[in-house]
Length: 409
Image 1 (tube, rainbow, N blue to C red):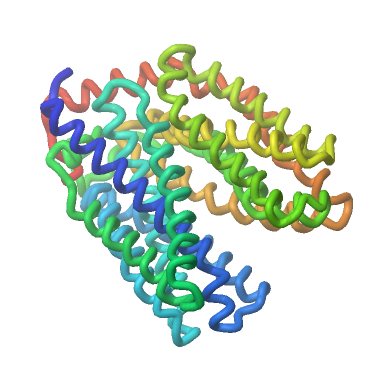
Image 2: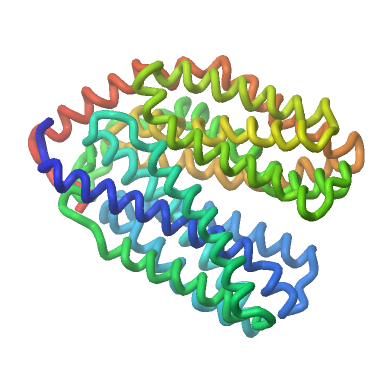
């Protein structure tokens, strides 16, 4: 391997992993703290839905901002800016008053969320290219593990501080903010050199691979439609439709998250052994079976198992889609990833809204077939994730780094 010493490459991997961890921790803390804030401010479900929609909209804007910053000053700058925006928003959200400031803080948080989503993927793909093997699954596993930890942190804080609804979430949000700032300051030279692109300030003449952007954007849209649908409606379905009870109903979502984490921990090794195409086909098929199981067998155990199986596709497809998208045109990889990332938020809205619209007729159980149907075309697109893309990425990356340029700053 040429270029930066192994220690620098490992340090850059740690920094990117920390960025994913900060993102997952912060997101989980914000989401799981919402009941406390809404109770204190008297926000109803409609207002809460509008706030969530605001976050999705501004997150899309944040992804665009990350694209602009990455082309101007490098993706490291975009990542740091997004983390700082989130940290500032965490403080305002934790204060929770007055209401206009609270809502505006969520808008700022969305901008930071989108910027970090996009720029962390940019950096992850670049560091992966320097490693010469798939490690994106491990980055996303850090996100999932941190999200689980964030939810537990909020629950533990609420238990310790009892009736003080502000102190527990504020503690958790402060922790996420500190971690985010630490990551923003942790850039290394390897972090900066991990960039196969034309010099900053010069627009590459290579055209954007628009067909590939739409293809892998569709994969991201489907994955996040599934993710949003299960995250929003799994507990409601188990509790309201299947009468599983308050103690059992959350287990569907818990099983889903555990499956995502396990899959992401296994994805890198699996792609190295069997190839991306085989992993995509297997993960997609498993999740289709899972969603069909949820829709066809309205029994608590079967539904919980079905939600767990559904997590396999989300766990594998997201890191592999960003990896493959970044390899389409390495010289413009940041722009490609920023555009593919936009489909994330469209999927998040679709999963929550469309399944909700189908909840009354034909019913929420049947509504879970929608993500299954959307997954089917991915089986026919799986070859686009294959080793040919990985080989193209490696060859272009080696050539681009051969002169030791430092374009990303």
